[in-house]
Image 1: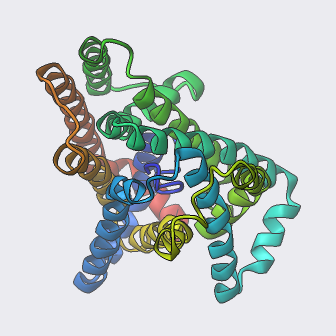
Image 2: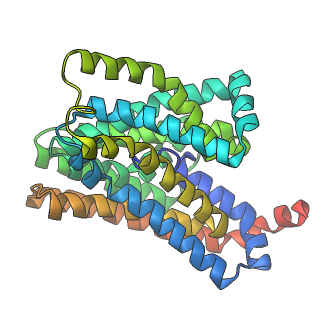
Length: 341
């Protein structure tokens, strides 16, 4: 998700899609119910997914002296190899070949690959250069950016509370721009790249599962990544083979660290209502923020506290509005629920 959440929040506009999906399924969910053990397992999977994404800054700093370009290139290649192992274990090669053979699906995922590459590199660069707090801001404002994309590109209409949330968020960006001395470009690039990533992935919908999607995306990016790794090695700038076996295996584990949260997220999404999954998404940037503040010792002057406070207020307004909308959903969703049986 964050960065790590390549597909964690890959419906866009995230808030709008989650709300629409919840409205369609809320009636059936309440009727059928879920066992406490199933809900508990879903929460555990969700906490594991967003917890891993939230702790990514610690992992990336452990890869120093590798630079962001080498880290992202390795992450892509090792993720592809790990996904191939998963596809083999899950017997998903037919689905993978079908995704490659459908030019519309492949083209959509190729575009998504470009967006997630920008997102991954920006996030890694931010963490390694003392901007992890600003990176967390990008994922805090991502739901707001998703709502904004819905208005601009999908011509969606906002409720009054959503307009208020957007106004507060805009004020927050101005305050943070003053605090940073410039526009918080890292946060905006992360939020926009992931927002557009979700918008593009929404075109694929449920036709492609998370593992297949990540496999195609990393396959698209793998040739360039391999070239980058070879160029770095030729110039004696690569650290993969020069920093000892511990560093090598840390780099190689990037495939597992990328794919595992996706599997946890998929397991959580099958067991929890979308509204709960939507609430859990804030865990990742919260952990990123705490990690940057406590463990990476990044500065947090008063202006940034004020700016972040306004962002959190905006998210609280947006979340409260969605909860109210979901409570009203059963009446609106009843006909659809009946028709679906």
